[in-house]
Length: 490
Figure 1: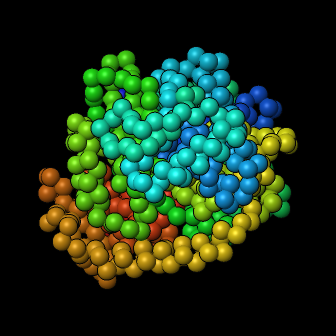
Figure 2: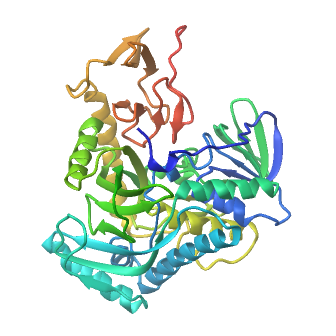
């Protein structure tokens, strides 16, 4: 099973790092943030290098629903409660600027990525959410947005109240990202794929990024990975949590220029997609904190059952992880005021707009330009939210850790999934349809959580911080830096 966005996608001219190199700016991560940053730095008389542990665009960016939307549940109510109206206004402008930037890049480069303007809805089937949605409408109108009210929506989901805006967009994220990759390569930006950075070493005036065999000396580093795993001073595990959701896409007869999302969790989200051959509905559901509901087969089955009620089959099915910050704002900018180390993460399920605006902010910082959004997205910002949320998140991390230790042998696993010890070490064994055993170490190298087996996507997943490994133990998603491949001589 795989994402709809990876269907019929081919990546050409793949180059892996095979020597030590030096560069002015090293961008780690080839998703929407990394590739946008690289694009914004074209023709700036700088040596730019981008690396990705897999293929460009094939990480979290390939799991998204591909919305370019500023109507994000009830975020402006949340920002007003946590900060003030001016912060909400700036955040709104950042999201609208991101959509405009994507459209501008598409038009300038004639990119075929199924971009369409759509009307977007936020709706609720809960009486208690109606007043909050009405408040969101009033805030948006105060910020100058034309908002429409509805008492029903044009899909087979219960709706008591909805609001909508008409100037949002959708696109094919991987077609877009891979075209930017091509443009960057044609403009002398070096892109190395299947190249994993496992350590950063700070020197007096530069950084050294280490792979298993080689090193990259860089004056400045941009960390554009989903979960920035090697920033110990930033304490990512207590500043954020991970939300998981499940997505199904299937062919349908009609295409509608609308998107939908619920006002509160567990989230339901719908959009439509049209390519040269087919129309699709994309349905996301069953969102939850990753440390909860660790029976992945049950989670997928629940989403499939819901999708069936909309006459959808699981033609495409996949899961996605989103890094959630407690004040609903991304972390974009300098780490601990270090001018040479930048980060972008924590997009709160809105990665396509926040990843795009991050690329603009990061490139401006690197070029010494002022950016009006740098302050509100500052990773070192202080908010009273953390005084209550950080201890709760620390507890959730501990719960997730211990749940993996005591729930591995639950009866939900089929007979071809075995947990045992070999030479005193915990291992997990998956027997495939050809009765071949795939053995891995059953401990995440990141922070030691035990792994669960994802029967649908055939991966070993960490329910603490969302590292992911294939059936033979190769790390395909961080924050883990290492594989869990079993070695017979251990």
